[in-house]
Image (tube, rainbow, N blue to C red):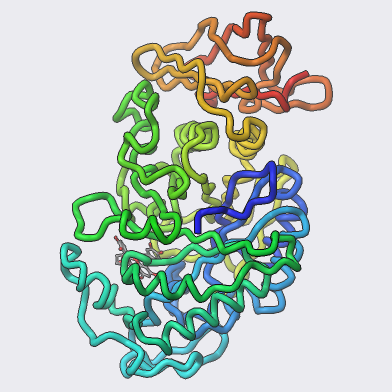
Amino acid sequence: QFDTNYASGRSGMVHLFEWKWDDIAAECENFLGPNGFAGVQVSPVNENAVKDSRPWWERYQPISYKLVTRSGNEEQFASMTRRCNAVGVRIYVDVIFNHMAADGGTYGTGGSTASPSSKSYPGVPYSSLDFNPTCAISNYNDANQVRNCELVGLRDLNQGNSYVQEKIAEFLNHLIDLGVAGFRVDAAKHMWPADLGVIYGRLKNLNTDHGFSSGSKAYIVQEVIDMGGEAISKSEYTGLGAITEFRHSDSIGKVFRGKDQLRYLSNWGTAWGFAASDRSLVFVDNHDNQRGHGAGGADVLTYKVSKQYKMASAFMLAHPFGTPRVMSSFSFSDTDQGPPTTDGHNIASPSFNSDNSCSGGWVCEHRWRQIYNMVAFRNAVGSDGIQNWWDNGSNQIAFSRGSRGFVAFNNDNYDLNSSLQTGLPAGTYCDVISGTKNGSSCTGKTVTVGSDGRASIYLGNSEDDGVLAIHVNAKL
Ligand SMILES: O=C(NCCCOc1c(-c2ccc(O)c(O)c2)oc2cc(O)cc(O)c2c1=O)[C@@H]1CCCN1C(=O)/C=C/c1ccc(O)c(O)c1
C-alpha cells in the first residue's frame, strides 16, 4: 500500500547502498534521527551468490532467504531495525523474489550451495518445479516474455506457484516480524501484477512492538523501469503500491544539465508523465542508473557532477511532488565495482571527517549540508502547496511552500538579483544552502524579509551552489 509509515514530522528516505547493518544503526542514532530523516532503504538482506570480483550486482543474485550477507547477519539486522525505529527512522528492505542466482555451481554469502543449471536451491529449498521454463528475455515488447523468461540468465521463479508464493510471503513476513516498515520490490516489471497482489495480500500487519500503529501495512515501492515504449507500463502496478518513477530521474537530470529550461518546472508532476504523487517514489539517481547504463541513461545526475546534483536534489526536496529518496553512494570508477572493503571481501565501515562528511570510499551525499538541510526544509513546510511562483523566462525560478519556506534557483550564466515575494512572515532568515542557522547567527547568507513578504534575493551565477533556501525553522 501507499502510506510510507513515516514518523510524524519526518520526510526524506535515504538509500544507504551497501552499508553494513551495524553502521546503519549508528547512522540512525548519530545523524539520521537528529536531522529529521524518515527512513533508510537498505541493500538486499537475503543470502546472495558470491562472485569473484564482488561486483555490486552479486547481491541481486539470490541463493536463499537466509538473512546473511556482507552487510551482516540476522541478529545484526534485528538490532538495526530496533535502534533505527527507536529514533524515528524506518527501515525499507530491497527484496528480490523475481529470480534466483544464475550461472554454474555456486555458493552463497551464508555458505549455502546452489546449482542454478539444475534450478536447485536447497537453501530455500527451491527445485525446478518452482521455476518457469528456461527462455531468455530478448524482446521487451512481449509482456509474456518479460514476465516468464529470464533476465540475464537469472533463473525465473514462477510466482503463480502456491509453494513459491508461500516461501516469498514467509520471507517478507519474517522481515515484518523484525520491524521493517516496507519493501522495495526489485524487478517488479518482471512479475505478473496478479501474482504480486496475492503475495502482498499474505503480508502481516506491521509489528506494533516497533512503534507502528496497529493495523499498519507495509509501504510497497515496486521497481518498474518504464520510460515509455515498452509493452509493460507502470500503471499496471500503481494499484498495488507505489512505483519507482524513473522519468523523474531522467527529466530532472535533463533540466539541471540545461537541456530543458527551469521555467518549465512550473507544472512539475503528472503533467511531465509521472505517476500520481502518492504512487511515485522519486529520486535524482539510483544505484543502477548512476552507473550510466540504467534507465535514464546519460542525463542522470550523480555525485560526480556535484553542483547540478545538489541543485536537482534541492529541487526534489523543496517540491511537494512524490516521496523523495536520496541516494548515498560509494565512489566508483568501474560500473561493476562493489563497495569499499578492508580485504577485498569484507565491506569497510564509513569513516567521518571533522566537517561530518564521509571518507574511506563512501560519498555519503545524505551528509552534504545542501542535502540534509533540504530534508529539514521539507519537514518544516509539511504539506503546504506551492505559491508565489516566479521565473525570469529562462533558468531562474523561485517559489514558496505556503508561508513556511522559500527557495530560489539560478541555472543561467548571469546573476539572479531581484526583489521577490517569499510568502514568509517578516524577519531575518538563514540561507540553509550556503550555511546553516547556528544559535542566533547564520554561518552562510542572511535574508531579510520585509513586512510585505518581499526580500532581495541574490544568487551569483558563479557561486558554489545555484540555490538559496529559507524556512521558518531557520529564522533568527
Ligand atoms: O549488463 C548487466 N545486466 C544486463 C542489463 C541490466 O539488466 C538488469 C535489469 C534490468 C535493466 C533494465 C530494465 O528495464 C529492466 O527491466 C531490468 O535488472 C536486474 C535486476 C536484478 O535484480 C538483477 C540483475 O542482474 C538485473 C539486470 O542485469 C550487468 C551484468 C549482470 C548484472 N548487470 C546489471 O547491470 C544489473 C543491473 C541491475 C541490478 C539490480 C537492479 O535492481 C536493477 O534495476 C538493475
